Image 1 (cartoon, rainbow, N blue to C red):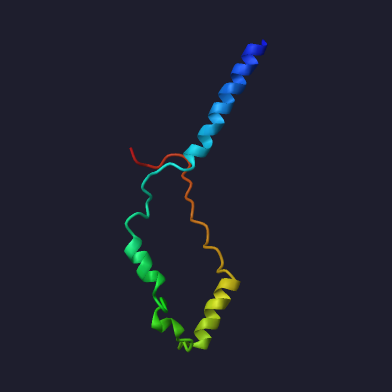
Image 2: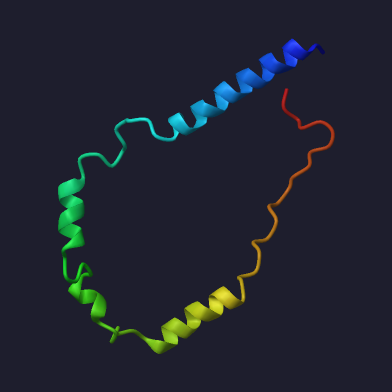
Length: 94
C-alpha cells in the first residue's frame, strides 16, 4: 500500500472515532419522560410499602403446608403410557 493510502485510512479512522463520543451524548426523549411528578412523589414517600406487608403472623395449617412441601420434594409418579391399538390385516369394512 502506498503511503498516501495509509494516511487516508488513518484520517478516516480518526474522524470516525470522534463520532463515537457524540453519539453517547445526543438529545432525545427517553421512555421515562413525563414521569417526573410520579418519581418525585415516590421519592418523598416515608414508607412506600403496604401496611399489611408487616403482618408476620400468617395463619395456615401446618399439616397442609408439610404436604405441599413433601409434594415438591418427591414428584408424583408419571402417568401411564397411552394404550396403543395396532390393527393388522382386514378391518372388515369395505
